[in-house]
Image 1: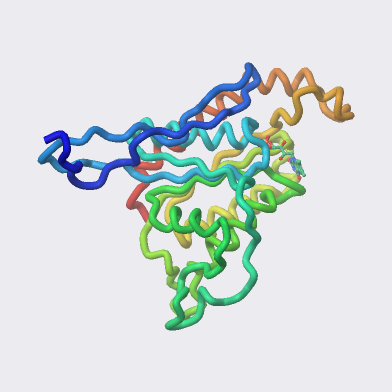
Image 2: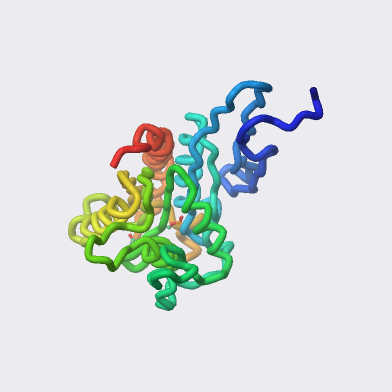
Amino acid sequence: MEDEPPLGPVRPAGQKSVNVRRYSGTERVPVFYPPLPHFAGAAIIVGMKIIGINGSPRKGWNTHILVEESLRGAASKGAEAELVNLYDLNFRGCISCFQCKRLEGPSLGRCAVQDSLRPVLDKIDSCDGLIIGSPIYIGELSASTRALIERLTFQYISYGADRKPRFTRRIPVGLIYTMNVPEEALESSGYPARFQFYEDLFTGIFGPVKTLLSTATWQAEDYGKYGMTMFDEGARRKRREEVFPQDRLRAFDLGRELEAENGKS
Ligand SMILES: Cc1cc2nc3c(=O)[nH]c(=O)nc-3n(C[C@H](O)[C@H](O)[C@H](O)COP(=O)(O)O)c2cc1C
């Protein structure tokens, strides 16, 4: 009996973990969640597969923490959650080869570039929910997040008259942005229009989108060492201690609520 293979699909056995630098020191944090038990002779219900992308080069900082928190939220509902640190990969944006549009070609609807983003695109293609986190860099998403979004979305965008996306399922998406600007400066910075653009892009291809903003973030361990006198370090630190934990909770909820969004269009 013990030698029998488990029935049905199971989550990956074992658990990976990463070292995450916290303000209180280094902590080892799981990024895959424990396998579901096997029930001999019974159907096994496997949770949603959620992919979380950290589009910041900094591990253990704002974006990473919030994406990880959202994955914890998803895992709390039984999802199989996986974190991808985009800056660990070596890839570029779309090279306009058009192989994903080539009718009857081997890569129709699929990015043809073979690099380290390829497995990530494959994972996203079969996942049940997607979370992308990015810092705002010079008014835009980080370069690697943009590169991912070019490759991810263009392969599914159809230039056919019906404009029907080549991603044929509907999955929920969470978009998390961290930024230096305070909330009251968002409007004048023009960011809401940008966030709306990405909401519309992802809704059109994938499904319902929830956006989470974390503003006036803590940018460096010691502002004094980096000539950051334009900021009130004390106020930022206070915000870090009092407001960022709320952002973490909102990120957790975003991940937890992805399941309820699954299947909605
Ligand atoms: C290259 C660079 C450009 C930035 N540009 C902006 C910007 O245009 N607007 C803004 O609000 N914050 C900007 N920031 C601040 C970051 O968006 C903010 O600190 C963010 O929370 C960093 O995310 P992380 O801690 O996950 O790395 C910039 C930071 C860097 C390093």
